[in-house]
Amino acid sequence: MMYYLVSLNDFLHYISLAFPSLPIQPVFPLLHASESNGPGIPLSVLLGSLLSIAGCVVRIFCYRTLQGFAFELQKSPKLATSGPYSIVRHPAYTGTWMNFIGSAMVHWWILGTGVKALGYAWLIGVGSGITVLLMRMDGEDALMKKLFGSEWEAWSKVVRYRLIPGVY
Image 1 (cartoon, rainbow, N blue to C red):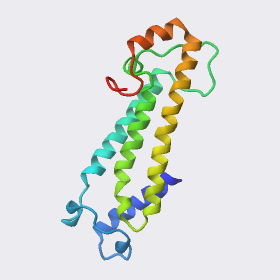
Image 2: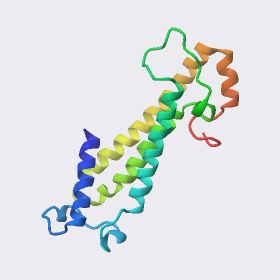
Image 3: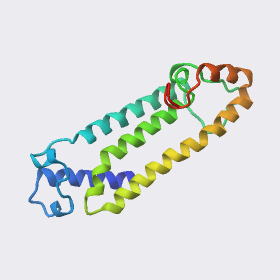
Image 4: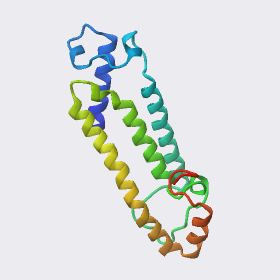
């Protein structure tokens, strides 16, 4: 629901730029110099959209590598070590982070409007989502180590990074 409200807010903002005579204009002041020169897509919106889409693509690759996904463990689970799982140990979380951060970049302008509470709620939601993912990784690594033992140990020595290759 939060995403839909923010997206509606985003839509109204760009409508107010394209049609400044509409009565919604006072709620959405011109926030960027580029927007005051006429309608256009701010760089943060463009880059955020691309990052968010890239995150979705990463998650699709993860889903396909796992050949679907279930919240229950399969009777004969296999350790995923190919595709995006050959680069980082939690690539689906990397994709989710990309999506969260990209969405925050797209909707950052809300903080400069008359509906700041919605913008702050959105940022708190993004921050909370990122934090939850960080907290889950240790537990998932421990479970995978328990389930797969030496296979997981060998894979984790090759794939050392959890989210970002060469960084973390």
